[in-house]
Length: 233
Image (cartoon, rainbow, N blue to C red):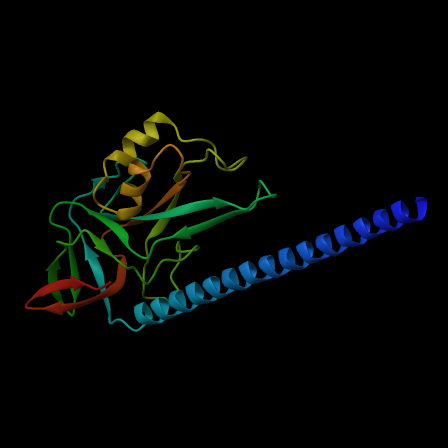
């Protein structure tokens, strides 16, 4: 009788072991399949980003000199200039590292200009009547130009940033900053996304300004058609 019970007990253990082994094998295959799909999706996303980057790079470029009699005061930093561009992007905290932030700026910059500001191209003055552009001469060290005869704008150290999930260098949005950002609602899709997000979302926006004065070189993707500058995206 004891032998029968022992045999049954061993059989049960063997069956359970086989069942658990099969379960873990299926689990491993399932995880591997999910990871394979994720890698494939990421690979496809990177290919699309690369193709989009190439498409933008191949767009024609316009380069001219800013002509501005007056100044405009920034609605963000209150700094004065003939024209300023606003870069809008997303700040993402990498899990496990509070100091590691990925900042991803959109290609399209908001254009804010003073009254009667124009761009001189080939000794012809063209009005600036567009609200967005893709600049091509934005650098992190643009106090000096790459060439001796090309004067570029400069960037501000003033940030607008949000950070319910970001730490240290990215404090939470202040109410006064939100009020400033509202000035640009419906001017950029990421700003609209920030204000229209649900409570469950955690979209952190980041904004940086670039300032240009009369005599500075402006360069962006575009073309001249029927006497007008047409920005290209």
